[in-house]
Length: 197
Image (cartoon, rainbow, N blue to C red):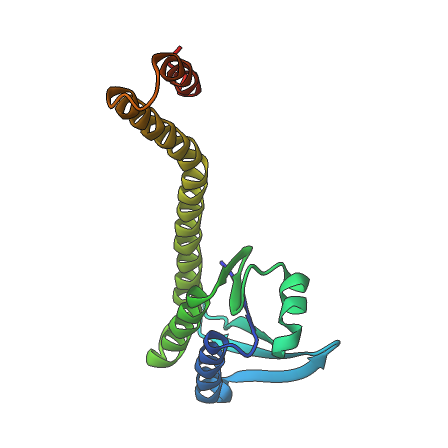
């Protein structure tokens, strides 16, 4: 189960929303957490929040929450440094989620850590792991759909266009706007393109 969760934010609206949620979380749990901040070259700031959680095993578990922020003009550097597809982002285990998903996870984490003071480390870590797994599966399905959409329409649009041209050709011939020889040559070409010959 993940014991570390990393957030990445810049200065866009969604990042501001994410930071507001995380700042609210930090202010509510500061009495049971160790918080440290430092500036990182070239223009990043990082805040590390180590949250102690009660465990069913009798030993307290630590959840580390790391928050990276950058000004807007260093956003691309931040994305490149950590291999992010977008900002804001969150990393749980090996999975990275961006945009609204990152904000949703921050909101979930806030709720988990503040609404139930008796939630155990196992419950919180399990929830984060299952959330990450569910979102990763959703992302995989969306990626598969995108690949299918990119592969099939090119062929189907092409075939549809040729079929429409063939119909127009038939109409022109019926209306005697083209001669028989031109009609036969063009029809043969279109049918070859459609793989009918």
